[in-house]
Length: 222
Image 1 (cartoon, one colour):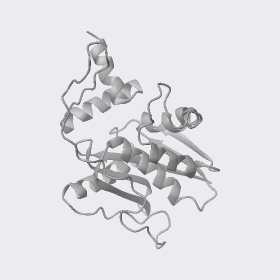
Image 2 (image 1 turned 45 degrees about the vertical axis):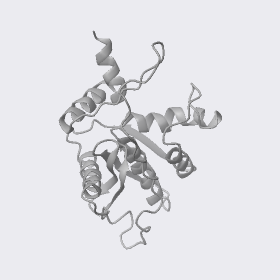
Image 3 (image 1 turned 180 degrees about the vertical axis):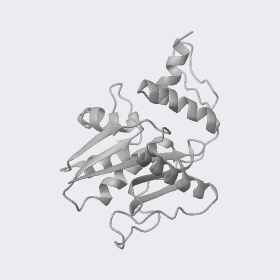
Image 4 (image 1 turned 180 degrees about the horizontal axis):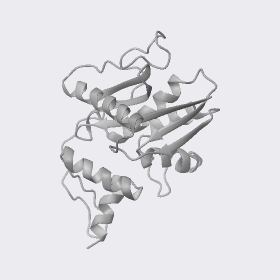
């Protein structure tokens, strides 16, 4: 048999209060989060917890994601990162390496396939996962714990709150927009409102790329 599930993440502020969720149907889903994290952390964590929840079954797993970052990380880049000691082609450390390594272990021996779906486009499973991930992030924004769902097997023991979650992103002073010599790359920190972020994500989804590359494409148009 084949299990089809959606996985999604959410961050309010990115980084900020963050959530993750996977969803199969109303009886089989779960969510969680932490007080400070990024959207990509939520996206990765959702997939990781889906594979952990279904570890005891021998079914094929189809994972619906609206994140090219997650799909490409797992299906294209991870083998090369491992060969290079979890470093990228430019020698820099892989981002979210703890989650990547946990995913690598969780995927071992599993039969799975990833499918990209456009986010916020009415796909019922994706919308259900997005709603629950956003609900978890909102709970942490209010200072409460995310309640989570029934899991894959209702009635089965659930991990303790906070178990196997990424460490919170430490709070740091906001950096200057640009901090580099004339010939170096610049790091731009850009805060977007919810509607602006949805527009950037929509552009990225239409182009089949990451939000960062979508913004770069806009800059190259001039």
